Length: 274
Image (spheres, rainbow, N blue to C red):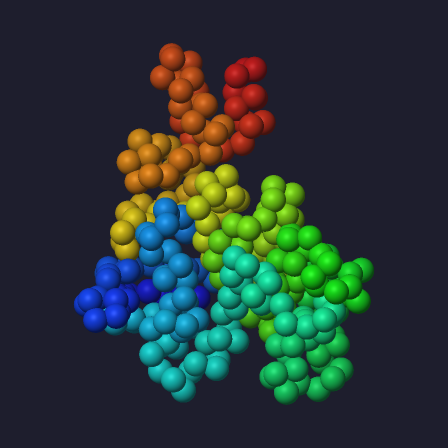
């Protein structure tokens, strides 16, 4: 779905030269994959996310989306239809006075017939389980509900890939869980490729693969189990493993025969009971 080849990027610092944000990034995202990207603030993960649908283009290297290079302006419209972006503040993506009008905004700007717009809005709201709130004013919704509306607005554009850049950073635990369940369901049931960027370690357990970034480079890739089993390396990067994984690691250090890559509470309980 997406191929990143030797990508480097730097921001201009207003006459003070350049500040490197990405250095020689190589990454492949398979169609239908659920990939999570983690890293502390300033690690380059949000900059990388903006390369996936050509909000930014590389200073060196290239990014391919379905074989189309993001540098090619002739492909820009197709790339942005294939890759939809959801950012951390849903208020910045909501533009209408009712939920259904907001979800219809994107399809309307594609110039689609009214009937198809209605079908897409209905489908998107059903997918994020907000159909019963279609006539509500967005500003009256909870944070989690607002983010689900923002996701519905992107889904109505029929993207093949959904990139979420810290979508739960401004939400409470309930809102975070609502968003996570919605994203997981879109990936499993609809086959949408998901790239999920966060600094909450407990949110990435459901991903197929996990990429760790530090200072503009990829330092670790693998399944969540493999990555979180390297707790010492993650801590040296300023990251914490999920609490249950850390507990399992400490119990193992105390002499218990426990796997170091446990991700779920029930899994640890079962292992202790056996």
